[in-house]
Image (cartoon, rainbow, N blue to C red; front, side, top):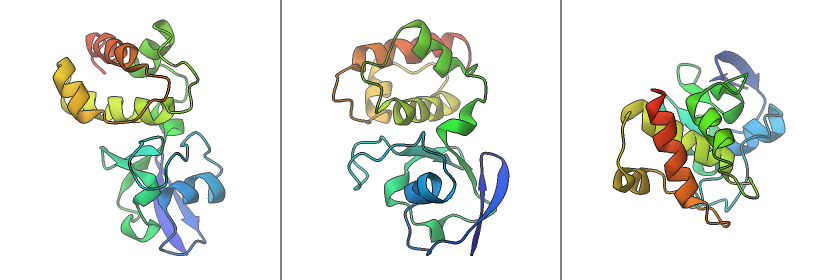
Length: 151
């Protein structure tokens, strides 16, 4: 039995310590906003925050997070969609198919928390999530719009 802090609440999870955090979120806690993409930490569809850092949850074993670590999934970013990144995404119609967007939003929000006015180059270096639809220009525009609202 493991205890973790997810979206501000401590929960107990009866999962093996080697279970990837992604599957703990989706299968044990029914937080299905975090998506499975590649399973090897490359695509970023499974991005969540651990202590404010954007991490690929498909390669983070449950045993590497503890109750003292703050894990935030897309469901915990904002309950009412008022986070500046979420608002910018809606205003600019950033997603196309939308599958990768929870991970993109989590990566973008982590970037803005550390760098409130990133350049395009900094965005490209820090938000390395893969979007099969190619919405990268809209992602950049969304990040810049959200930066104007001081995310």
